[in-house]
Image (tube, rainbow, N blue to C red):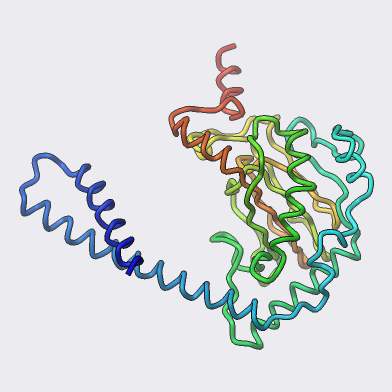
Length: 316
């Protein structure tokens, strides 16, 4: 009952919004015809969304009830053998550039994160989950609209572990490095992407749906597939300005090494030419940071946007 009431309220709000943007010189007949047609399409999308939500809830419930991890210790952050130098640096609450290194002046930082052997255990667990889904006739939900291969880690038990990674690793580093990002980091989307010659080979230029992103190379053997970075941009300038020469940077993947960058740092994955590469990606979000951006509006360009540097060059 409450669901129907919510749908009615949502529909009325949608109609009110659409009606407020219709041409003033339209006749009543034109307005009615247009509204009827657009409402039919809107209801179809709403119903499809409800069905997708129902299927997702069923999928998650099935995993929770029946899936049993192959290696339960992997789901416990306290058992992750994170690089001790990194942990000591975080405990001191001071950035050590010999441990967390900035790549040129790009705002991309790299550091040793996990042993290669532990990365392989994570890969084994991912393969095990994928096979379990196949054996049980479950459709795998992929990480995002860009990647056709990989898994969402939060779907099969890693949510608390990744929450701990955000709280104990990413947030302290963000406090030290990206001081304009308003903390806390209070939500995340954790997933693994896979690139291979017969799967996704590359990923086009984009920004992430995050305040800060952690990207960890899990393995295995591969050639090429570097990450290309092309400047930090706000939503108003993501696709409107080319990168400056000093903003361009290519990052070579190393198993067990992680990189940290702003979600608004434009990047792409170049094609691999051989082998198979898996990366653990953690999109870390801040509701306060998002609210600040929304409050300022799309027409306000924040000071952290690299577009200001382009303007300054033109002013000289």
